[in-house]
Image (tube, rainbow, N blue to C red; front, side):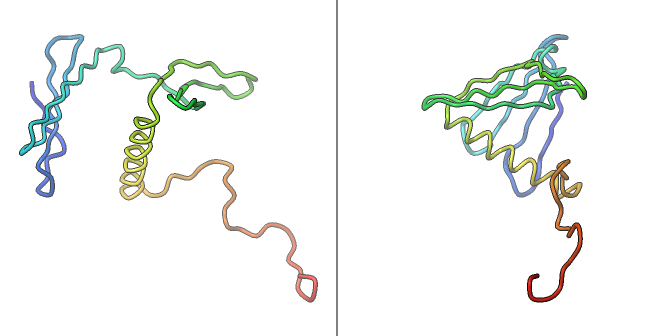
Length: 132
């Protein structure tokens, strides 16, 4: 089976996904006019994903280490379930593509509100006069 996704009149590119067995799916990214074809293999276990609500990022001059984990309310510790090591250049590419995806999401669904982030509300008493 082949699914086409993301085809628009503005862009000359599209993605195709096909299942070649029960355990392996291939995503082909094709840019017409250019000779670029990337086959991405995604097995079923990886395709299910892992939920994360806790993230840690550390770096050295040559690499970034991104940890994905979970923390549960009331527990004093978090558990890391996945770790990604990448170059600074790929980390910056990831930042850019994530930023674009968040922007697209917010344009479609509205601003993502972060818990605990103070809003522009005045709290407490207002004082008027010379010492205000």
